[in-house]
Length: 132
Image (cartoon, rainbow, N blue to C red; front, top):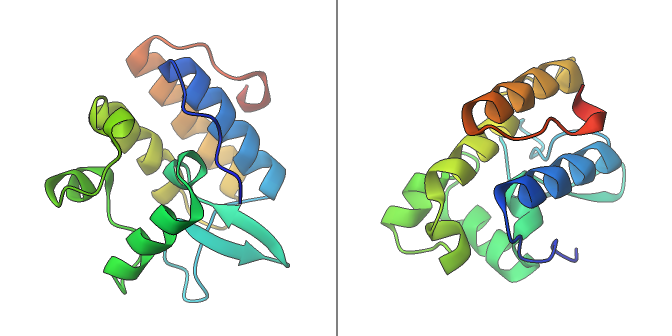
């Protein structure tokens, strides 16, 4: 999967990630329901929020670190696994990841959009049109 270009702003990251998650049709989950940085959904490659910002090698390495689903951005930071651009704003990216990971699979999009609107409010960002 080709990652999004490295974002130059929080808004750019948010817009790109939301658009990609909508295009893939839902969250990135393993067969046992855990969040993962890369997965397949009906033969379509999927990625979680932060998974859309890194290459396959990085995402698959992160998935290989834990058998219990994706590690959070803060844990990846503590372990020294984050690329510099994520490390520079790890609190924001952690919350963007949580908007994906903490949304139940059932009725995913309405709840995901609530989480995205909350994130926009916290960071004074514009709500993507698709999440309104």
